[in-house]
Length: 336
Image (tube, rainbow, N blue to C red; front, side):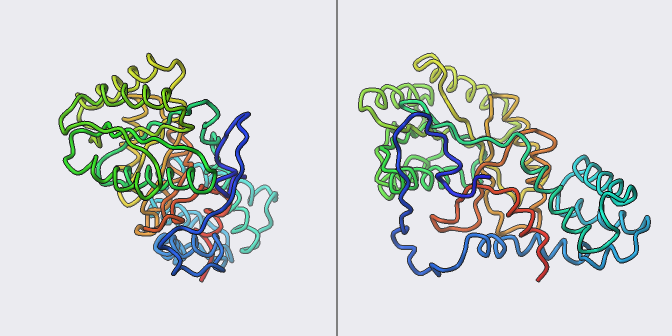
């Protein structure tokens, strides 16, 4: 399963080499600290919320209360009613049938496997196989959308040597273009922007035109952060997508939605609304380090069928990373 940027990106027939780079200005982080240990630390709040109930000792005596406590723990972690019911029913059946030994360690290990399997629903890579590849980023303001774009651009430029162009189609928020410009400079990417209040479709049009004319490898287009209840803005998102597709058939080749993990079930509703307004290929789940609601990852996979492709577990460049279902499930239930 994908665990590195090289694993999560699909370059098709492109001749691209991967050279991990040390993020400038981030050298104070311990270099020897593994990705799993950092992930485990970032999930500390979610793990503490679960570990009070889901320990190996929970399964010392298997009865109705055992499954009720497991169900309650998953609900509190915002795994969602549907996901929780599926997990508990499946695990209970496997224990009752003898497929899983009635042993606390074995049951918990099987629980990790089931959660990882659910988190792997519709697992796919980020499609950058086209030339140029067009990536569209959507989501609500405050979810880390623009920051995620900048970090993706940095990795593409500095670890794969790709030329990257950013399109600032969020023309409603005053600081949006400035923020994206700052990230473009940090990542070594170019940017296409317009005046505040300009038509987002026209910015997207100019960005695609520039990407083709300049022969850039990847174009990432930022869109206006909008609430899923704002129907007119959601309609406009569809318009931006149509503008891109008309100019470059088949584009955008990848559409990601940025979801703030701390919003829990509200984030799930946001993802559902965006998926209804435009095709969504994957989720960038941010702020996992600041929430006890890490189970939202499972709810998104089960109830929407949209895979989480990237996760944000901190402020540094290396803290936006490819999502690994097995590592996630293990870190979520790893006892202190």
